Image 1 (tube, rainbow, N blue to C red):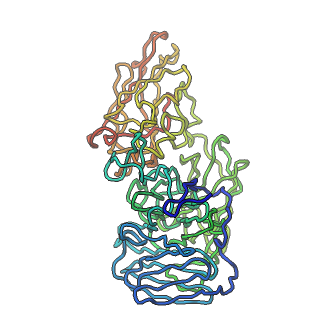
Image 2: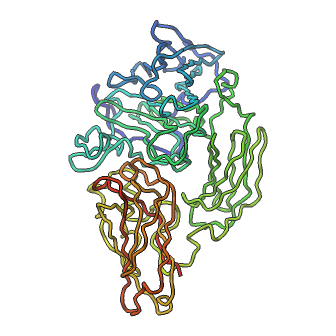
Image 3: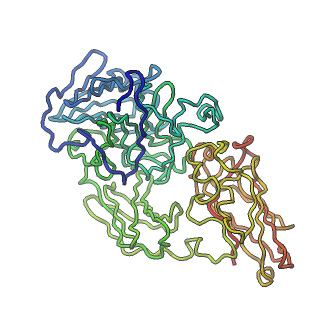
Length: 558
């Protein structure tokens, strides 16, 4: 099947995670050791260094500012839209740019103040390997964007607004004629969910293969923009620090490589994926801040006890300089995290996305730090507490609540969303799926939960818990139980930017607790007690940008 010269056939867009099989990735992976391919080398056209990989890829780097000014694959130019190049942030400005060849590798080095940036080509490969070393805040964020010409890859995915002319929010959330919302923010994916992002026509694939994110911020569950498609063209991103919905301070130092990879339509080679990619060929290139495999260590845990086997567990390592993570084996909790920079880290065990255990671990170069079985104390998992009733599950996410899945790739106003209102009767069935994932001051504040108590239960005080995953504009729940009204709780620390409307519930998990006295309950056991949940805040604007919060779980303890 083929398209017309002016409009490629629309094909399925690839957005795949680490478990995805690599497709027909001709010349997509590292060749070790690569022979010198015919045509491999570089020239100087006066304005750019022109690098020919000796395969099917020729790219140019500006000698003035380090922009990637051309990406020609099999004779077709892919780079550029709106008169803009591909670059760090929105372009670096005047930089010192040099080039050198070392055997089968060509390295372009860019220095802009304290920031250093690198492009590498390997003989016979259709890849551009990219590193960025950010030393301080003189560059506001750490983002690389590959700008792709319009019309080469067409799609109608949630992060495409080519056919979405109506603005819904700010200048980055749009609606199609049928009301379905689109935004560059609507990737659906957490960092841990994907190894690469991009498009395929079936004959050509263009991908951004992410780095290991050791110098990024936000951890394995961070959500950010990854890709977009508009009438002007497309963009592929490597986001290492983005000011939106951040839960951690910025990390500095060398990050990479991330890889711009072309294929003959299939997925990029799995040898390029973070955790698989080896770069011994870069050890002697002089990349500032580069640490070879021999200068790194490993952490391995023999198991984790005290898990709820209905959930996936992740182990993270983090300090101010670096972050890493790995999956715990479902059978016994075994985990292994390799390629770790030396240092002392906080080790965190996550049940889903909820932290249930932490400890300190030290990593040394060239060695494995082996940990004995980690035991999660029962009290660390709120799901272990005995409850009279519970809505949702304590896993650090709004999963299972009404509209929760849709909100990672749509605006709350999207017509596919069920009504954000709706009260819940405990014992009626389907309580979690009927309860909204998000609550806003202007939209659905005042949700009601109806429940009955036995005489013994009504004779005692109980603790009510509401777990949240993030909040916008300091939104937090104040509760009323029958005639008893709680105090207004203090707001926990949360990101100050948009979250609930741009595809992310990921903030700082926090549990609000309310000590409800026995006098608050109805003494007639045939009557329903009524819990009312209001969102309070002195901040925010209106509608879906009024103060709001995302729900993890709520329960009344026995």
